[in-house]
Length: 513
Image (tube, rainbow, N blue to C red):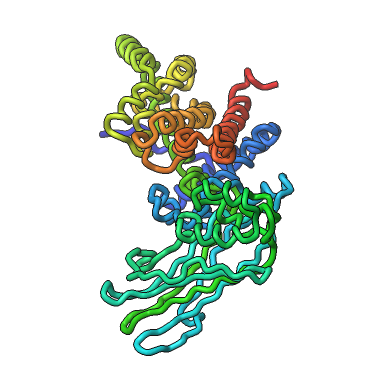
């Protein structure tokens, strides 16, 4: 075939990098695109930082992300894994406020104290056929409130045929000595961290409480002795007697607290073939941690920091999926037009008219849900949010000259939708996604609060609020149990609202001031 001379016209431009090799040209083009992205990002940041609300939202987001990512450092993962295991929390005080309450109230609350000693810390007294271990614990009491309770735990090994004997006594700062347990026979039937053990909780054992009350009767009036005889020797009343001065009113709580060192002596007689592995004393505080504890003794700080992970996960995942689906749906509907557009908008109207919360409640009640499928279910209904706005924007972009030119040179439908239309709506989608996060978090909290155990199984902020409501926390004055998760939900919602509004003002010129 003959070719005209115009097919061999020489290049009138200087040789570019692409003439020196395809790969090198691609690299230069890639660097050019990266440079454009960096320049665009720099311009966007220059505009974004003009909005103080956006900066505040960004700071809050960084703090929330730090809390979520640093959760294992703030609270061990086992606290999250054992959140619904009551046995794990038996060594924690129940329903106590945060430690910083002491500074606000002026009352020096007793902290939570755990003491452990191994067999090497005990004095060993060998005897015929048995081994006697004597262990001492010194508790320095300098507070305005006594501990909530005292737990003594002995870990060891003995058989049902030849049991060990445990005795406990305490020497008070005033020199008074009280025998709490004269001799208890045990084969260590309980399991603690994989070891056989036996624990004694002073406030829960009527035999120990009776000995404390009997000792105190020597120092009080006959009237107070009669009054005290009506009460069962259990709970905080008995603990207060133990830490009060030996004077009139000790039985009715009128005596002053006796501050100083309390020495607890535990004597364990182990039969031949038995062993003592360790001893422990726990003085349950009247305050604990930064956020206090609930009625199960669970550290609320652990629930809050691990809940931050779940809140951000469900909020961002739901908003991301629903925004992507909604934007693509609106663009496709606008671009294809005609009967397709009409049919897609009818589907949109049907889905948007379905109430989400009742559907979630029914599904959760019937089947139970996890964080993952709850986010997926919410996204199935929430994609309708941006559709109308995106469709109207896409209808305008569709009529632009460059879109008409692309259509004229034969650009395919898929490429037209993704590159020429959806790409222009992408900045608006970021604002929609940020503004959609709070709604997802609040919806999850609502489902968890209303359904409790039949809702999300993970310890989310909504579940913590449900547990507080179930335990009548507000009626009992346990304000910290409600305040922490409620405040975190508000702060997280505010974070994304501030960021979303700033993005909206930057990307929507009509909202700029």
